[in-house]
Amino acid sequence: MSFLGSLLQELQEQLQHESIEVTAAQVAEAAESERLNVTLAGGVMHRLKQQALAEGRSCSSLANFLIEDGLRRHGTLR
Image (cartoon, rainbow, N blue to C red; front, side, top):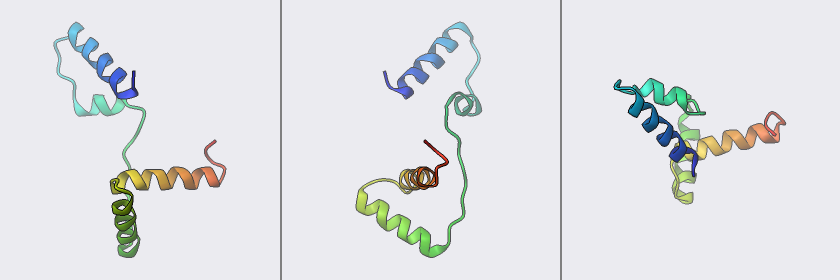
């Protein structure tokens, strides 16, 4: 089962036992990822958009990949 599938199953099981609504904050907290807002220079954003378009992916997906790749190259992530 995928990560998102297991997360969905866990939330559904919690909802069966409780009659409260799940907030967006609870879903975000249950996920193992976080959101980051970054301001990029116009030229950098243009290059990111062009590369994402060429690869057929979203800007956020490409930015995530580039950040992870950069951290691995600098030895921060293993």
